[in-house]
Image (tube, rainbow, N blue to C red; front, side):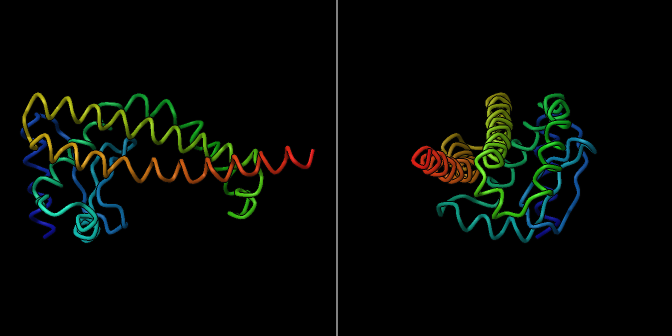
Length: 179
């Protein structure tokens, strides 16, 4: 399976004329773009699991090619990713100083998590928009399938943001009732 997935990624890179290293990683993330080291990582086992969450009818080839386009969308946005690195590290350092319970019971800390969610969501949306442009130019994945995979890919980020936003709003509401 790993060889098949790597070949699909290579075929997509070749089709769009981009040169990005590919690495198999057993990290629990289906595919990712490492903007610092400029490579696409993939976890073959995770891809197989993630595909089960997509509607039937999406093939392994379509899934891998769509997500490869998405990761290349991040590569096209590499300068912006580098530009966010300082703030990302600041947020990470602050988060490390508090337990999960503290982060979710303190509105200021939760606001920081929402900022992080918003930043991640913006990068994901940009990557999918770039992927869409590549797909329009090169016709790699059928449009209805591409859109289905895109919606599914964005959903995780949107749901995490909305979940934390609701908690944040409840915290603010509780604070205003006390004051």
